[in-house]
Length: 468
Image (cartoon, rainbow, N blue to C red; front, side, top):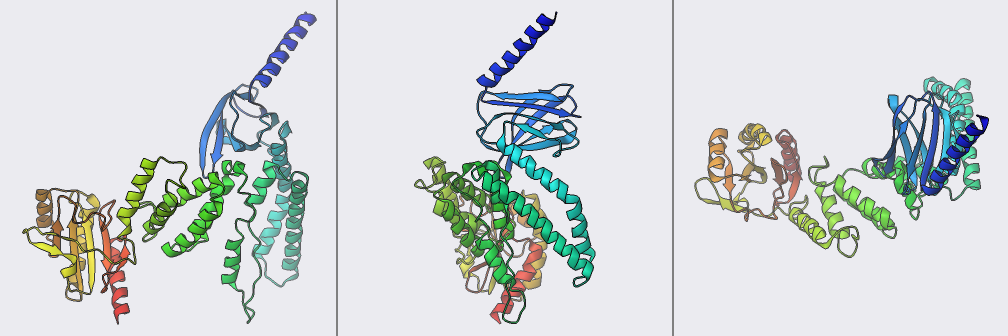
């Protein structure tokens, strides 16, 4: 009987060894306190998570993830029953085991065969041992009064704890300079906040921000594609563009252009950065006034057959055409003229209007938001028509009858035109979702767009102040 048991044991061991040898990925996990069910392997690509694979957990909290095809090196986590999870790093070492207690991570985690995951949990353990004291010290500082002995003592201890944390990481970096863990952690570090002062002794915040932004990407090794499969690049890019850059088209274009050109030699980063930034400021996807200017700049400069290796020429041609259609109606450009017939068949044009300020209203009669905004616009017009403001309505995506019925229903008293062929407005005033409002100043320059009617009074008052 003992001999039979030994044979069975050896047979199972041989089967497991063969499986590990045959598979490119073999992750053996045993977690105490883990309920039976499914373990979902979640991968990361920049700012997106995706389901990479799954495995079945038995009643003992054990499961094995096996794959013939290797996983991209990067940051992963297992999503487990009970809304529990734990993370790990994968590099070329994709056959390893993890053991621990799901209710006492990271202190219980044992890693065998994965250097990067082992380093990750070494760091987790160090931080978890520090955190209780660090939290108490931080709370003392938050509630304390600068200049008191208690505050000074707490600040000194905080500095020491952070120095210990840095020394711990620096030692790991020194021992394993090329490890994914090292590249991942260094990339995630933010620059120091220098204590720049003005000549009068005040803090020079403008210089601090300038320095911080200039050194924000210093820790990122753009030659290392593995970092794209961790959250660090997506998080940094979002913060750099959305938080550290003024949300104004001129600033965004300047910063985005420089960053994209910086990563152009590193094709995977170039592809992600160009696509991500363009996508953030595509029409309807941004609340930044004239965010389309950022989109147009990036498409025209980087989505070309010579540079955009990831897309087909016909797709790039469509993108370029789309950007060209938007270009004429960017803020700061001279508003193009539109000439089309009104409801009585008379030709009307924007440039024949003599009023100093013109509001262009592009609408569709069957658009619910247009129906909501139309009465407000008529009220706005009644307030301003004798004070130097004219409204020029342009109907789109409709029929002659629907348009004329809409004019009667809304009681518009300002000029309205409609060209069923769209030739009168093509590549002039871009409209993706109606209604769309543009404001032209006395020089017929576009000074505002992407507005609600409720914002028009403020814009018009601002323009009249400029004229005075």
